[in-house]
Image (cartoon, rainbow, N blue to C red; front, side):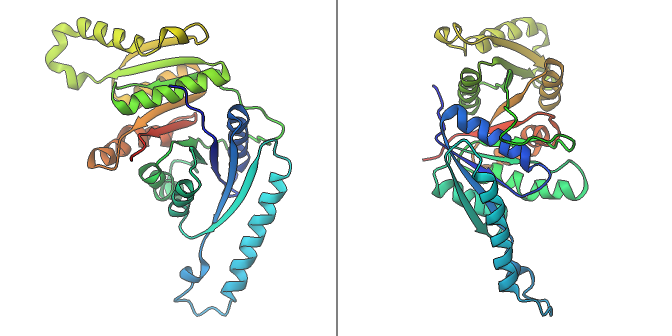
Length: 296
């Protein structure tokens, strides 16, 4: 199934990673002829300062923050080569972004992590992780690239190799569909990987060769024959802790993006986000596209 997103929401926070967010947002919108929503969320100062004795004019300060954000986004938007709309929200970033993504029927949200330790880890926990749990559309999370400047109008994002993690669930099937669509748009190599966790198959070690043969055949069979005419597909079985195995393969093979499926709003999802997906988003040196099933 080919995926064709028509509306992409870009979460802009004016951090050091803003150029990178713009670059990926514009690149994907150009490939899919999609509309770009430039969203910035300002904190409600009245709530933060309601118990403070400060003499600041909170409403005036809030209005100034909104005006500043609007001007910065307008300055960027005027040079963008794609249809775009600016939206300024007020409140908790994850909550506002999730609500806007639903209201605007966004097909994808793009954001960036802000590092892996200390206060930045808390930021990731309060925004990105919450978005993973609440969004009803895929979330593309970009890794920190502190020393890379990527002006959106001057740099073209290229995806040459895309890695899809497969566990043969309906969620990973959807992730495969997204990976295949991206590979088609960017004419990229598609790598499909299933990770065998030894502890789960400790009672089957004598038949491990047969198991690997079955899994390899199943993995290889995910690519439709009609797609092989234009898509270079590679299937690989890895062994070990899933997030470590996928991350090491991505580094070794020079992957440009990792696509993963995540489950619904259940205890299992919380465990999953707390392990494989969460760890890959925290530590993977490449963008991670987290895909979930759209609930009716």
